[in-house]
Image (tube, rainbow, N blue to C red; front, side, top):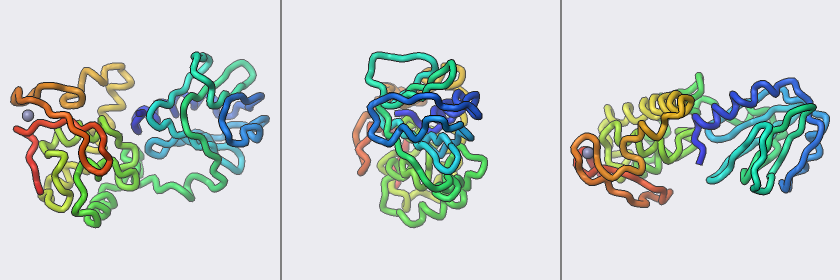
Length: 243
Ligand SMILES: [Zn+2]
């Protein structure tokens, strides 16, 4: 599932389309795609895992869900969800969820919850964490209203980095570790972005999909824990449990 940094890279690749007019649309999406014809792309924004293509008076929101993808000037055999055709170019979206937003993105989204945004507010995240003391940290990190853009890879790697067991409870984390968790959610996302750009992301995984801990050579466990039941990798030796 594409995480925040991948969506930021998607935005970058769509920036050259700003100002260009859509000539035709195709695809099996159920949204009223014809309204896009003759519209100019005015801006491309992101909020966490949402990619937002802005037009005059409305926005197309793209969420890649688990298996979504996009191609520019290329197609694959998967059924097209939506294809935007320009004069000599096209953008193709597959297996994603699409929606039109009638309000301006700034009215709907709080960009200070997006860990990759320049407006990211660690203080706001700390404030929200105070309200969910009984939640496992692995679930808290995936909460898009607190850590917008953080996905399963970032969750696993942040907890490994700060040596915290994913089953730890938010309210039991020492204050210092709580602020480290908040800080590293952004730091790791920035590293992710840099590595992804250089096509070396996988090489830098320390715990995600790993079998042995690089710190102490202990076994890495894989469990589907918390209420989100997402794949969670952890080392019981160096990641301490606070419950
Ligand atoms: Zn370890």
